[in-house]
Length: 133
Image (tube, rainbow, N blue to C red; front, side):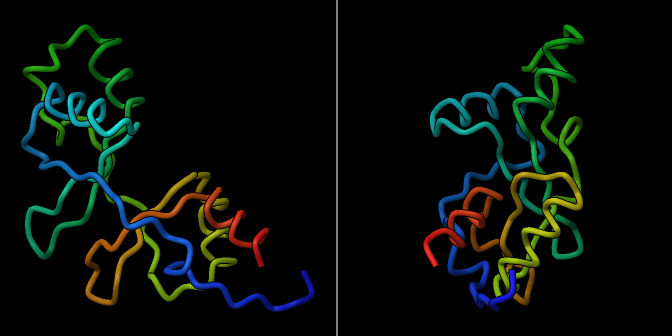
């Protein structure tokens, strides 16, 4: 790419994001995923020093179902991934693409300067943003 495209992550993010508390059960997480037709949930911070987490259907399959554990007895915090990959809302989209590719991730949560979650962005969102330019 020789031309400089100044698209920011905030221009391409989706503000709809579904969250869950880490103390919720996996059964509750699965119900929320089913209701919203999503394959992951962002796990809220416990306090200002904590980081965001994520629970995916893959986590549930690998850690609960495949191991014959009861989803009613497993809490989200036991199987979630943490910290969640985040990108600042003012980051250039091209750098967000590089970050996601480097860490082999398909999505990230977009945060403001105070680390508050604003939305989510996927590799697809970022690439399609370039296609529209």
